[in-house]
Amino acid sequence: MSKLHDKLAQQIPPFREQVKKLVKERGAQVISQVSIEQAYGGMRGVKSLVCDTSEVPPDKGLIIRGIPIAQLTDKLPEDILWLLLTGELPGKEEVEDLQAELRKRVAVPEYVWSVLRAMPADSHPMVMLNTAILVLEKESVFRQRYDAGMKKDEYWVAVLEDALNIIAKLPTIAAGIYRMRFGKGARIPSDPTLDWAADYAHMLGLPDPKGEFAKLMRLYMVLHSDHESGNVSAMTAATVNSALSDLYYALSAGLNGLAGPLHGLANQECLGWILDTNKKFGGRPTNEQLKKYAEDTLAAGRVVPGYGHAVLRITDPRFDAFLAFGKKYCAGDPVFDTVAAVFEVVPDVLKQVQKIKDPWPNVDAGSGGLLYHYGMTEFPYYTVLFSVSRALGICSQAVIARALGLAITRPKSVTTRWIQAQAPPPPAAAGV
Ligand code: AMX
Image (cartoon, rainbow, N blue to C red):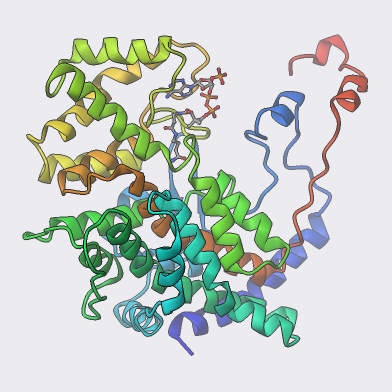
């Protein structure tokens, strides 16, 4: 058994007891209320989910297990996976043990490539990724053990097995999709001497003489790894997994949500928007030109991609981390310089629009320009990178959910007629 398994096997029973006691003693305590506006408005702000891997306070941004993301930017994704699952950063031996576990599981069955090859050549890379994950479902340890009558207490062990198998294989699958979909030539075999993100960079096959792209991949995989559980992809995956559909079903379902333009696809749209400005103005635009371009985008009824957030009310610290990386390694690149200039201009433009609650950049505003700089110019692929990273968080959340034995998700819906029939609050309380 791996050190990660052993650590979790120590932690889970007392944690389970704590939660059981909490629910028994204080189960009826109210932690949130729901307004009509929230019922029609994507449940924004309703506290009705529990997620222990990370939290996103609107004024601070991502905090993983108590550590702000800005303090984790020099870590490996493997460190983050350990942290997400156990609440602690791993020691050297622990992370090496986890890396060895992942390496053991890296091989992707040939049938996955056959299915991908059979897909239309112009399939979106996200469709290819989600198809590959779903096709692999026949490997699910959870499903095999469930069918054999596994005890409830052991669910998390089988989910951990599935999680490690999926996470180990994702870079190979995702890199294979990149090379296949964009005509980059034969797949590049995994290099067992490399860490998880550097191996992914290696298998993508972009020239990387100074090792900077591998550094960017490590940072990228750390920054996108988790964002609590109320976002579309995490919540979808958790809902599917709550039916005890295994992690292959659940992750694929969640990542289908990540493929939406208001969620993970924004990084693709964001770079498109930046490149359009460069094209229109023949290189990096002036700040005045950018301001006008942003105003025209709004006037056309479109969003400025990469700006705004459902939860955050500050510049996303993950954007800050990408900006710092770009200033160190990519200064002078017209695309990156435009990304930096947009940050100087766009928040003030968005602040003029009353309905926009967050005028600041989110994680997607920065990443595309950096990928473009290193030669990854196929921006329909960008959400795949996001997915490989986000799998760390989604899989960790699933292990914990099954360890706690969380119930199948089943909130109550009501009809518009039912809402209309509710008595309005007395005048003094109205609007509170
Ligand atoms: N440009 C133009 N309009 C924007 C905007 C932006 N960047 N951000 C918000 N708005 C608009 C919304 O479309 C909404 O308009 P509507 O009432 O006419 O529908 C209004 O402002 C209020 O929205 P909000 O409460 O501030 O945000 P939200 O929680 O409804 O939506 C988000 C959040 C991210 C979908 C939205 O800010 C947006 O569309 N941003 C651009 C796309 C983007 O960057 N998405 C990536 C998010 C991060 C991620 O998941 N990867």
